Length: 165
View: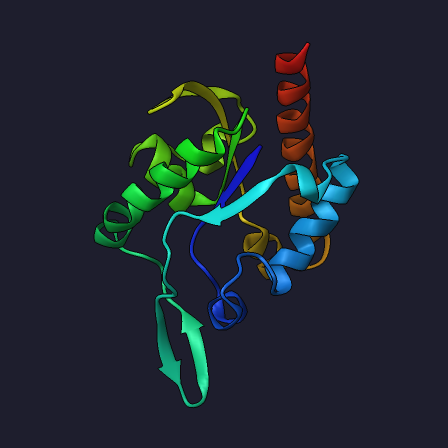
């Protein structure tokens, strides 16, 4: 299984590894709860650079533009070709747009296993919310968002398990 996020965050950009900051810790919790071992997943981002604006000493995330997504798509496709995952999980709208097109809406189509034509053949793909969206939610909304992420990861796990049978 491959998990494709949006772009590196500040911590990930500084360390050069995806999902090692706060969103990565939340993703790990969701994977644990969904019964998906982290060593069984390949983790990457659709956009390979951290787009930000500076506010004092802080680097604040800026949403990648379509040009950034398109520019990085050959690298993402090359990674997915090498890894050849049984299923691809798009974490958030940017990853979903990169792989499923601009008309795809995570809010309406999340958690559905779809088919994606890749250079190595058709692969199942599922889109869900990005862990950072869960972090931005508060109170009961955060609990609900986390539960939704876990449910989508379980759906992905089950789809991979069905393929293996």
